[in-house]
Image (cartoon, rainbow, N blue to C red; front, side):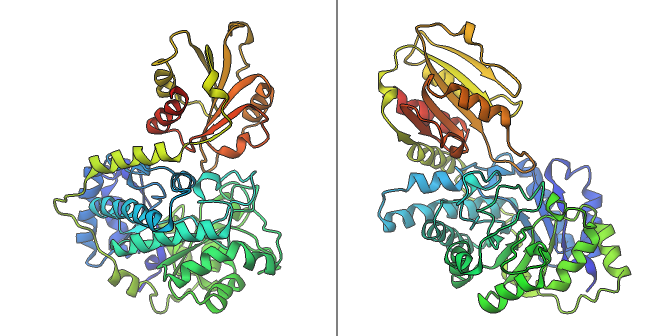
Length: 471
């Protein structure tokens, strides 16, 4: 076995045809598999089948499908984020919740398998205890161990029943941070008893449910390793997970191109992670360079811990499938409607709304919500604001009531938008209604008549929020 067998490089689905020779070359060199980003369903499916056939072994074909296949692959279904799922099922009996979750994650598994993906890098087992967390937020099922454990374990069981390997992340827990680990190294400052009472609970229950894989976060946790080293590179953290928590599955690092590694050389960090006990290096920036570095340093791979993992996963269906994509999209819309949560009732007396669409990225959002609102309100105004824009007070008629629709998705490398926070503060006390199409914590300090939480910005979520107002 060579050093490539511990590496899972990036595969860009949008370039899979043009760069197929490169990906095939990595397969021939012995890579463990790929993490897939983007692309069109049938194209990616066909090319992944060719790579699997060329490999002569089962490749680990992984992808970040926290919201289903549509999160990465055009043609797949995009489902609501984890926090929206928890909101949709809030108040239901556990038995009913389990039935819906089984249906949901069976859909995840079926669509992923159809595409040729056999490993889903989910669930997120982080507990979002810090409202200023810029990278977890709606990706978490909730703010307490019981909620996250219940939903996370139901996802694990359903995916693994469907022939998909699940990967719980990001151990030891990325919930109580104010730093995006794509940008810098977060530090978890809690003592060990506090961590064991909160952050570790969902991971421990996932281990009990025999989750196949756990992702090590780029997180400094001094209670486990006083050196301050990222958990992904720490023998002490890995020892705790293996010996104290009893995890015997596959350990994967988070992506090695992330900013949390700071000034560390990426190839050196990869070697440190493997020496510490990690099994798989995820997303090296240059797979060939990392493999060459490991060889140069005399790293001896030893037994391949992924062998049993490889044997237990499906290579893919790669046949005509009865996967109900249309039905899954309808189910996603149903969940989006169920997820919408409301604080207050001030929206019921709106007469002449003027909608301010606040978007913290320079992208087009909000059209669907405006169109839906116009079904009832003929005398309606709206404008779109992006970073740097000022509120156009002079253009807002005095007899209209302000509705602030906030579009802010959790996204890697994004950081915080001071413009958005300041604009929300300016509108406090002036807007009759705030609607969050994304991170709900942005509205936590707003004292207003009504707040509506949709949790994401899909057309179905915008339609669902409008439906609540138009009743």
